[in-house]
Length: 148
Ligand SMILES: CC(C)(COP(=O)(O)OP(=O)(O)OC[C@H]1O[C@@H](n2cnc3c(N)ncnc32)[C@H](O)[C@@H]1OP(=O)(O)O)[C@@H](O)C(=O)NCCC(=O)NCCS
Image (tube, rainbow, N blue to C red; front, side, top):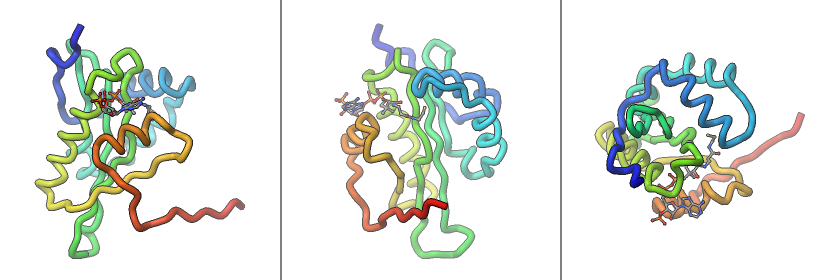
């Protein structure tokens, strides 16, 4: 089946929690319901307006969480973020993540975003390849860490 034929992309809602937990568990092999509960609870208005899910025949099979910063500080450039993206393994490699990212980018552009950041683990080959395919390149920032 070409899943894109029945693909619907819509704004993420709190009720999508269980579907997101299920996809996350399929991808990572771990149930992180309380993590996702807190994450969705803490989502601010802006973030929940631009975050999306992909439905195929009425079931949520992918999601993308985005955010925007800069508004509070009046900085000249508004920065967009891709926080997390996940597609049910049974629906991967059909263009769902590409469709989700395109829609999110469209939403971010409307808000005046000129640059989008995301953080990907150096070992996460699927995500690195995906973001490369979407045109992302290495940015000027480096991540610093301190183990305590
Ligand atoms: C990365 C991920 C989002 C890609 O989703 P997807 O729907 O399969 O991606 P798409 O089919 O839209 O792929 C778009 C492009 O990205 C690239 N791409 C995606 N996955 C790839 C992979 N595994 N290897 C190489 N290239 C890949 C391809 O260039 C592809 O374009 P093409 O089909 O024209 O070649 C998906 O594999 C995923 O959810 N991985 C787990 C991510 C994760 O850990 N999230 C947090 C927990 S849920």
